[in-house]
Length: 166
Image 1 (cartoon, rainbow, N blue to C red):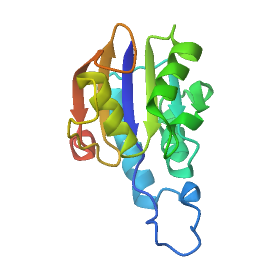
Image 2: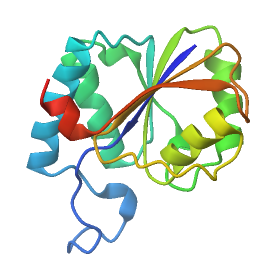
Image 3: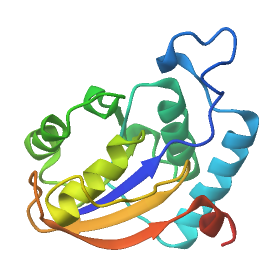
Image 4: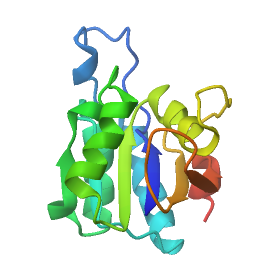
């Protein structure tokens, strides 16, 4: 299985008036523009996926929607509560295995620190590996059997700046 982990793009800052509910913070216009360029770069890199699982938080959902639109894959987008801020990684992994374990390529769109922690758990077995996944950053992991613990190989970790230069 190939897993693509994508952190949401640039969102409205937490302290912005009118966004007291963190789950409602949208992408900024700059975040949307950059995400379109990043999605185009993913196409240039021949990224392929059978499903996009996204946090239901507005900023992650909008990021996933941009990717789905660029890839003409709107029907492949599913909102997944376990990817929301504070979601449990074991529950997420179990959900992927139970509901989507037959798929070969899945994109996960979520938040920090959960995305970096997931990468660390899958490549090293715990959350001690220090990984920086910037807003709009993309990571690719490969695993023959997804489980909580060391089970994956890190294929690439790309910063948004690298992606937007493609």
